[in-house]
Image (cartoon, rainbow, N blue to C red; front, side, top):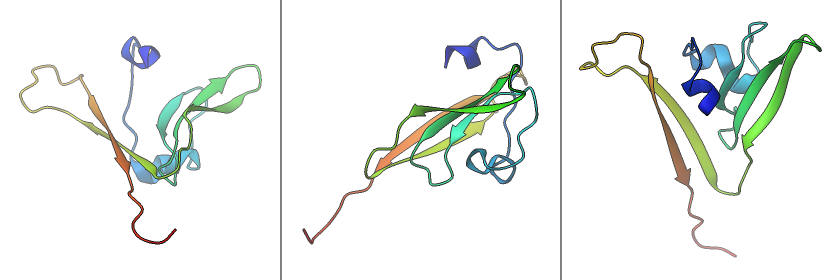
Length: 98
């Protein structure tokens, strides 16, 4: 995540555009987000040589773990350019059965 922290520019993209990386990704931009099934955290890095996005799994799938990523601005922040994010991790507990 240091690349994001020290980036000169970053944008938050709506879920309907990102779609777990299956949406329309803009050339020359890199993205990170949650997979469509919400079980992986992924990075789509732009590869200049191949002229396409390369998928890198940052947090691999693990049974019963689900992720949500939220971007927001704090109202009390004076600097409009600061975007905060929150990663929510949920573990589904299996009940009953074998």
